[in-house]
Length: 124
Image (cartoon, rainbow, N blue to C red; front, top):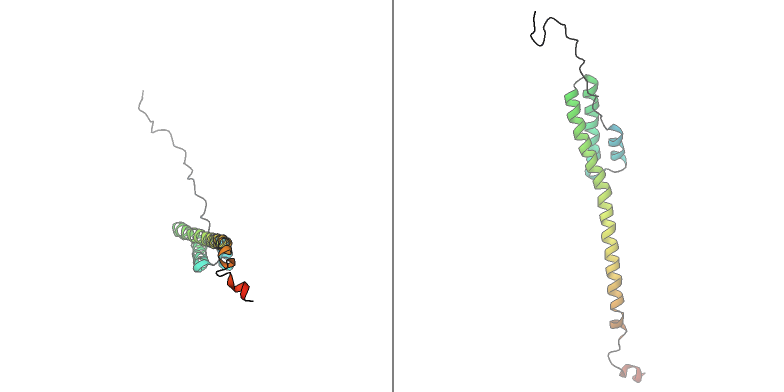
């Protein structure tokens, strides 16, 4: 009687390998960033990496496709953030500048309406 564990006489079932899904190439996002939000040409760089990722995926080189896809995603995120954040920052600076200038002008109204010499009115 054989009591060894695991038994070698039993055939193992073939393990199914879990294949990871192919990497995304982010091509649509790259085209959108290239056409509409091309901040410092980052959208164009993202488009180049997206096309490289798609080519590598089609040729079967999944690891290279994953690397290019990651770079494309990074450049797309930078282009989108730069194109959204910088105009908002510029608008906030303009608004605060206008508010500051209006307060300054409101405070200086008294200075410009002050009569330095009352004799100017009497001379006329």
